[in-house]
Length: 538
Image (cartoon, rainbow, N blue to C red; front, top):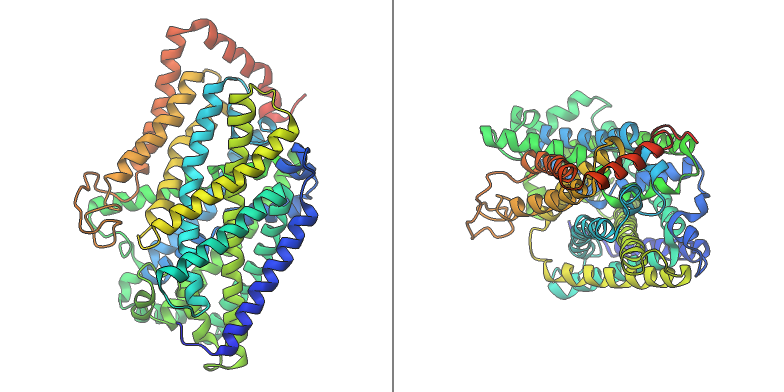
């Protein structure tokens, strides 16, 4: 993987420098005024549905989707195909179930949605805690992976110092993007990213199909051979196993992805920047189309990597297969050191680089916005914070969150941190999804039920993950030499998702009995806003 010419390395460096310069310039030009909260949080609602749809798709497609899902397709075949389809289905679920009510109920953050009928410090604090719990693990995964990937892409020594330097560089850039650009600035970066991502992926996928005479059957037969798994490549079980527990784990992972990914705070935050309900509908249509197209390209690229590179070489470079798309670009080049190889590899490297930058910037902005708006402006100042002060807090919170993520990423850069991605999605499915669906569609949902679903679902997911096979007891676990895997699965969704919904229902039932007056007031507030919430009626 690291065997490429100095010309390729120089081209990659020039491309990286150009991308950073252009995106930083756009962030500065699109950045909000220092006392304009609406501009910082929503970009003045100025994006057209097409642009906002691209921005939603850009936030939705993280580096984990580009690299890890492609790697899983290359190494596990059928299991990777199902994961890619589940990723697209999650956004479809958001489009048809939650997008319009969220746009009608929200203003800046998820806390605004949840506190609409249940105002109070406890709700705002809970929303902030869960937002931080869901986005910080993703940030650590992205930054930690950036260290290893960039050292390989730039042909640097694969030592801790070089990886740490790459983590710090990417982390510093993400802080600048989030602090200076706000919602509009990060949206422009997401649009650039999605155009580069789709264009480059389409070229790579076309080259793969062209290599096999544009016959999907030929690609699949070559992938079966290259994977070393034979017919098992097109059957469930290569990723997690074939036992009954493993099959349940596979089902659990897919349910978690479908329910959890689209409910993550940095995704739902984009919906509040749509002007109105028709705009959010058209935005989601563009986003779903874009993400579905990209997932199809991921399936082709991953299968092509298995066919042309082979699982033996992919796992030798990275056991999780995250470098498979880069290795595929090298194989598809005309010859080692040729102009075609240099251009294609540089384009794929640039695609990975801009994906890393934009993904972490969007997550940092969502976390900083929740801390500044929910925790500082409403929980600490009871909604009376000066806009200029809140804006300043949001900027400095971006710096604090980014610094924390950089520090944690450098500490865990030698670990298998893929479990943190699963943890973040499990929290989204087990805590955020129950809280949002109950809050938007159930008249009897109360403050007690909301707190129970947020804290209970997140705590259940975290506790089960700590004692799962993903953390200990297996060679691929975070601590392979330890053995405290009391929970026999790698994904907690099959247990934690029902627990989150059950906690919200029980909490609301107990609230109705203990505080009848308060519960009736919450129900009255919901009924008064129900028509506007669900149908945008005045």
